[in-house]
Length: 88
Image (cartoon, rainbow, N blue to C red; front, side):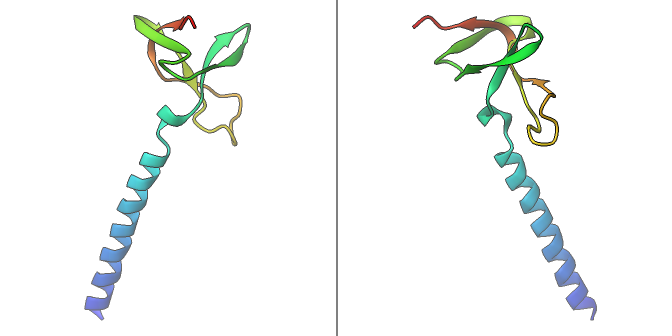
């Protein structure tokens, strides 16, 4: 009986660690759309390097939505620096 419990506990721990790693890789904020504040709202800015860049500065360059479904009006800082659009 102890052997079965040990095997089940090891399996549960392994699955939990694997799930945590998979979730952290999936939920990387680099893949999420980036926004900048404009007139008391947030506007999408496009792709980093293609549409905009962030120059070194102490401010916040872009924001992202950590949970767009449950909290659609909450934005968190992402890139540090100063927002600079790329001239096309």
